[in-house]
Length: 129
Image (cartoon, rainbow, N blue to C red; front, side, top):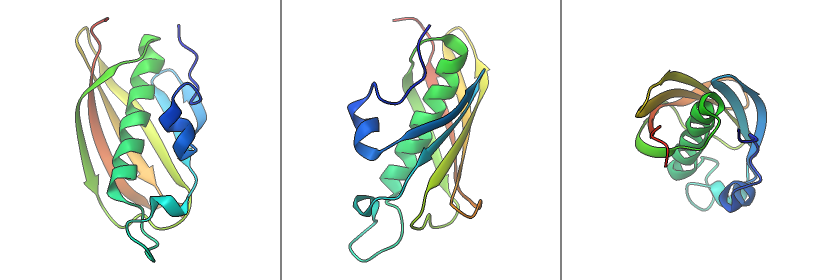
């Protein structure tokens, strides 16, 4: 079994990712705002790459919480629904299907006011390495 924590990854530490809840197939993660996440200088919008990275990581953790091991991303789809503005983002991820070769997770990304700013569907290889 793995311990679900974010400090094992240099990238997770770099962006300040926080794991706030983990259950069987469901996780909640928070990403506090940093000026480095701006879409461009002077903007109060998150860069889309940060949003997609958060969705991918949260989906991975949802699948890993079911399998007890890390998985590799096969596919990632992100729908940006509205600008994610300055403030903490919260990712809510749920494992939809965990099969022998592929796992699928859905992720909802909310801003500090609780509005959904993006959603994602992620596919991961569940074949043991």
